[in-house]
Amino acid sequence: MKFIVLPGGSLQGEVVVAGDKSISHRAVILGAISQGVTTISNFLSSEDCLHTVSVCRALGVQIEQHEDQLRIEGVGLHGLCAPSQPLDFGNAGTGIRLVCGLLAGQNFSTTLQGDASLNQRPMRRVVNPLRQMGAQISGQQPNNSEEIFPPLVISPVRHLTGIEYALPVPSAQIKSCLLLAGLYANGSTTIIETKKSRDHSERMLAQFGAHIETTDRTVKLTSTELTACHVDIPNDISSAAFFLVGAAMHIGSHILLKNVGINPTRMGVVHILRKMGAKIEIKNVKNTPEPTADIEVKGTQLIGIEVPQEWVVDAIDEFPILFVAASCAKGTTVFKGLHELRVKESDRIAAMSEGLKKLGVVLEIFADGLMIQGSTILGGELESFGDHRVAMALTMASLFASAPIVINNCDPIKTSFPQFRKIANTLGLQIEEKAFEEL
Image (cartoon, rainbow, N blue to C red; front, side, top):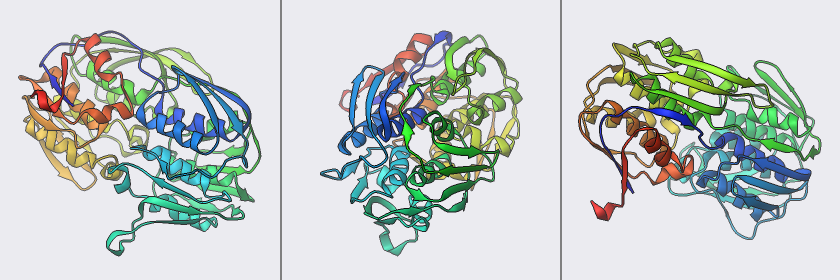
């Protein structure tokens, strides 16, 4: 499926994006292994999150879904059952890495796999520390490489042993994987970070009654049974970011994003935009387990900056759309410290660089980032490289384009934001969807 996006327009109106993807994954997993019935509201019914639901069902958990509401009959820490076939995670990197930790301490064997894209994502970062805890995990190592890729095979073990582990890179996925494994470990599991990554797992584990202690850079967990609860999922700031940035960079745009998650570990995109001169106001803050607010954005001329590296972790999923903002800003913007973008659904530095250059943007590529000169945006035919965030980011460039933009392979948008095109068109973009054979 392709997008054909007409140039120009502005963004106007109220926006209600769907529930947070990261939190949806975690709510299903913790609900599955808690004691009692967990209910979830505003669940994100995207392909990635639905794969996590299917995986938990394959492990013997009863889950009922009615639109964005879930009812999960938890089986407790030790009630999961061996699946009858390999567990399929589709394109869900979060799903496979978190469930790898969940299953590392079980007394049955499992195989974890994904689609062609996910089976090329690196897994050594979670496999190695799990092995230190006593897990028996093997994966694919083509050409005798040190890296490990799915499918992963997890063999049964009697128990795991808690460890103290310093994360080599700030990563909520690695941290969450090890915390889930820690629920099945003797002793305590302690995770040390150089920079705090998103803390949804820590917040939700506490909500489910886990024995967990947190400081700014350290998380310590001791195994205990979890108790079912109700989880109200905020709207996803990473999905909202496409419209947040689009409106901020376009003079004349004015939108209000409703009930968006404003967890401090996810606010990097707002900090960066404000430093670029954006007019953003946070309203109606609610201090729930995951804080939420309405975000009002009025368009203005953004200016180029050197993005502080201390904000990188807090905006790790938003850099594709921030690259577009830099392309439309006055002056030069420098992004450094973005090594993790090289191992996302695509190499996002390379993918966005290719797309932006085809649109006439002047830029320089570094091993860990980009330098982008504010430029005149042209039209053209672009590739998404099978990456949902690349496809959506390039779509938003149409606000400044002088000709239509065609983006190939937009199907992966369904993995995180199925309503993207509908909401974008309601706000003022003009996106037409066509199958390959129609062009």
